[in-house]
Image (cartoon, rainbow, N blue to C red; front, side, top):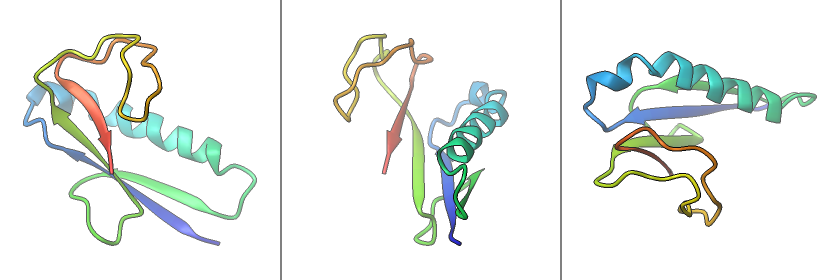
Length: 92
C-alpha cells in the first residue's frame, strides 16, 4: 500500500484565490480518490510549499493572458471551461 502526496502551491499572491482554496483542494482530493478507488493506495492533497518528498506538485501562477475555453493546454488537450482571470494551473 502506497500513500502519495499532492501539494498545491499558490504563486498568485492573490487574496481572491483564498476563498477558492478549500474548494480546489476538495475537488482535487475527490478526483484522486476516484482515480485510486478499489486500490490499496491513497493520495493526500494539501496546500503548501512543494518539497522533494511530494509525489506531485501543482502550481497556481499569475498569467498575463486569459485562458479561453477551447484553447490548447500545455498537454495539448482543449479547455472546456473558461479559466478564472490570471489563473492557469501548471503541473510539474
